[in-house]
Image (cartoon, rainbow, N blue to C red; front, side):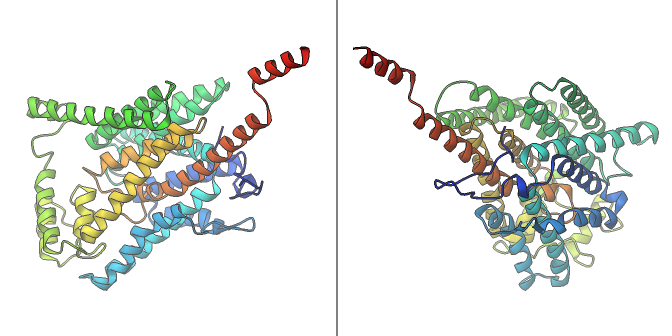
Length: 443
């Protein structure tokens, strides 16, 4: 299996990137990822202490075993484009100090994400998120039962039921991928299936329609890719077939909602306004249209004293004037960073989607790319109803901006394994050639 077992090598036999000597051990990587997951998921409870623990785990790994984890590469540059633009927005921000503080926090979390992408092997990354997701889901589920927090199980621990939802669906996704990558390990397979069930229960208790819909969409995407990958055909043909299936599905869902209307929305527990989201979407587009190119500045709209922000807080009943957004990641980006920011985020997310999709369909044995594909799909869907990738100290930012480096590492390992197998085939004659040589010698 790929994901850190062997270093990729160039045509001359030299290592092209860090091999296992620069990766964390299996136990250390799994434990570090799981602890970081729980600390960031419980940020509403652990406050800055959870972030400090995460920083203490990952910042020392910037220089790890004589290697520099932030060495430049295409994946690393892509991860830092949006944080760099957020820092640059200080120059035109309506509230430059707020933008500077939040952008610095944002960038520091992306640094941690890139370090993880470089020093943690893919199987350990998957295992760590499965463990962290299961632990977080178990804590939240027990809280819902023992503390009487249901149906909004995460209200006191994680800040909102939507936060509980994303933790549960991330844990469920990676537990399922971890189960797929287990081979002839029945004991761990049973434990992993138990983790899947715990996360599924937590997802149900969260009562988060956004998490439920994005989880269903992600499972469909992963299922289609696994099914199509079983058929012998070129990777590009497989990719085109997957994209065509997605387009057909989107069209079918659109027709379903158009025909059923209110009844279709009731299936996910929403009314025609999506519990007020459509109003804030329209308002967000109006706000963004005032400064459509560069926006008002990163984290510079939801600031006490801004009349429109005060109005929306009042309408939503948020009197402490914190923790609100337009319930759409793309619209929120448009408001804060303008059309330029939207272009950056769309390029980023679709680059990760197609890179992981075609990479998984191309290479033979790496579930790291499948996990990245599932996570990218989840964020694409969630971006329509939530704001996951514009926060500062959040689990979503930590995982979202890790994707390019994670995908890049999987590609390098996949190409190395493919190159080694091709070299073996070239060195070893085929059966037909061996037979023909034997026949010639006998004659």
